[in-house]
Length: 178
Image 1: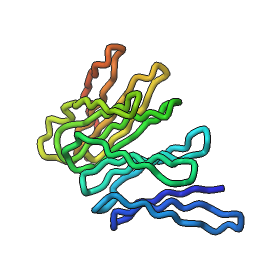
Image 2 (image 1 turned 180 degrees about the vertical axis):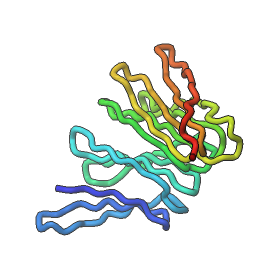
Image 3 (image 1 turned 60 degrees about the horizontal axis):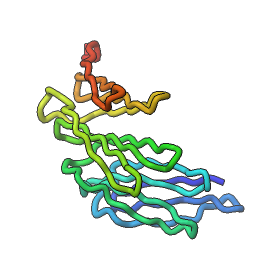
Image 4 (image 1 turned 30 degrees about the horizontal axis):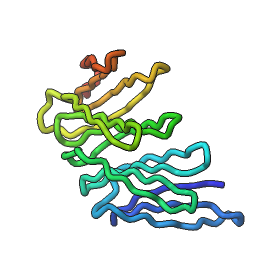
């Protein structure tokens, strides 16, 4: 059966679960004070949901479904910018890597470690001061290393993680309007 997760202007998140008759039962989750800007959903091996949500209230939240369909909420501390774009990757152990950016010239990589603690790494995202992030894509290669593409206006940057956890950055050209 289908599960759909939506964010709303009132800060709510709704989990829509299709029932046997084809209708939907709606469960409402509340913790944000402002519009939910973005969310990402994962399903674990047991069929339980993990939802990552970011809102205009500058809160990034991780919602983990428990066996009784109740959700445990974990805020991610340390992000100080508005949340414009993020991408999350969940590994086989259920731990998350979240890459996010906002209006500041920084991209943050937030990695969840064992026990639920987070480490945050900041990358200078742009030489274009004051231009909000317009695009963000994250890919993980077969070695678990991140490749991040960010865009601000006509500036495109490619960040490639090496085996030591450092990022090499290249500015790509040819994306300007003609």
